[in-house]
Length: 259
Image 1 (cartoon, rainbow, N blue to C red):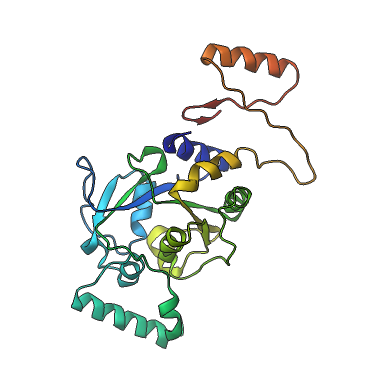
Image 2: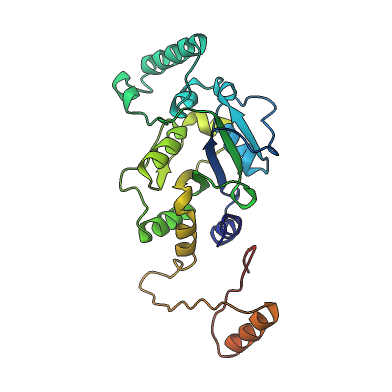
């Protein structure tokens, strides 16, 4: 199953309001990809733009508007922006939003930042380093169960502020990671009161999506799932009619998702 098919199937199966987003960190952008026209107020704002259908890349300076996000992305800040980050952190400490001893524990990408690529998973022309799923508690629960079933779930607690730290945490641990979000993210992305995020390393998204296809069994229920690969659409319809006539519940999985 391709990343394109996986992205479409995940949105369809889970009923996501916004599609999963593919993010990758590369030394350079593909020749046919355009840079974002103007910096977003925060790095997480690029997640929303990608979910809405934009395909683009960012450079280091496109993240200077959010010093905290620049820090988690592993971006070396120029002196004036670094001073801004220091002032922002001090303000957060004074407001008791964060403690100074917490700063060194915030996850941060260790590789030098060159460019970041963004697109819907179903439309990505690149292999994602991490896939970001935005959904309700129930939707994320189902994804988490799929991640647990495939052995790629992070056994740690759900993350909080800053939301963007979910990216380096997932990348460096190689495990799927959940986040409640933070106030900044909710302001810049319109994240709902009942929504959060789940980040899955790109190499594991196909395993998680495949597992999710078979995780909608009710508690105390039992079911045998059989996946049948057909020769062509006509063959699929013949099998569909035969199984339906015998009383079986059938889902037709197409290249673009599940019908």
